[in-house]
Amino acid sequence: MQSSLFSVRGKRVIITGGSKGIGLALARGFCEAGAEVTITARDPHYLEQSRQALAKINPHVRAQPLDVTDIHAINTFFANQPAFDILINNAGTEHVCPSLKMTESIWDQIINTNLKGSFFCARACAEHMSPHGHGVIINLCSLTSEVGVPGATPYGASKSGLLGMTRALSSEWAKLGIRVNAIGPGYFKTEMTDVFYQDEQWCESMLEKIPMQRFGELDDLIGTAIFLASDASRYMSGQVLYVDGGYLASI
Image (cartoon, rainbow, N blue to C red; front, side):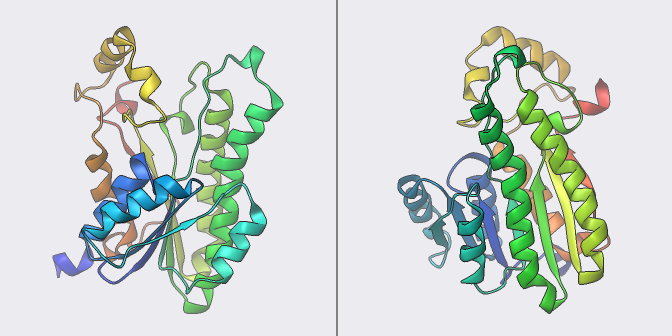
């Protein structure tokens, strides 16, 4: 019974931003768990490289280009797919910049990718989930959903908005059988965050604030995602699980 509760075998999973970083790690985890995985990203080159790597685990993994800032592309994409059981809204971007020097184009790029894109992916996916009476949506929030980080105002705004969106959609779509939860990663080294980890002083300072005394490894997120996607969390909705080594609990 316990193993079946956590099973995602045969479930149709789509992961946006699935060609790199957290998205690729989650795709690998779901492939290993026997799910039918589709990854999307803007760059066809990286997307195909990632598909080939994942195909060594599951030869049926699929990859399709998708720009989540293009609402028409989102609607067209989901209209031409069979209904997914699970959507993981992972596509995101960041640009560290002092707020007094923030430009409209940087603001729009981050908000449109992280928040607006996630909402319209969720809406398009939910339209196809609702006739079946079930579905799971997992949004990738952040520590900045809870705390302020200098130089990351639009990113924090987008991730705080994503937390609010998670709660609102969970309330609205529960009657459709759709659960909406979120994961809040702590400090994980990815291509997007690598600039921070090149600063030894920053690394030392940050490690002192993390009770577990280490940065996250991408595999640390897989179990949380599978839990939220499976029947083991069937009575959970509107929640965010922070995977942060105890950081938020200690500040």
